[in-house]
Length: 95
Image (tube, rainbow, N blue to C red; front, side, top):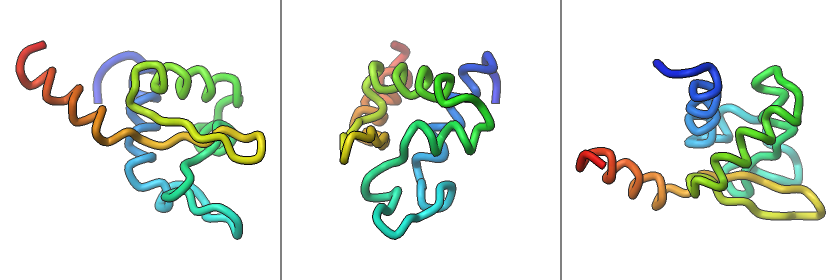
């Protein structure tokens, strides 16, 4: 993988969110494949402060490749596969 450390970190997050159940623990109340994962879970997995993970997640959300869902005051992040496919097609066409 090439690019900046921040770019690699964001790519890692996107890779983990392809199959969140394989990378994040399933709790009794929430399955990460269904609801997504919190910034706290991403931060713990990356070994960075929550604020750092949140900055990456916010950027990916603004780019449209992640969707958010609020449940009981917490924000959960999931991949937007349709938008990711659209972006991939743009780059394939030489965007």
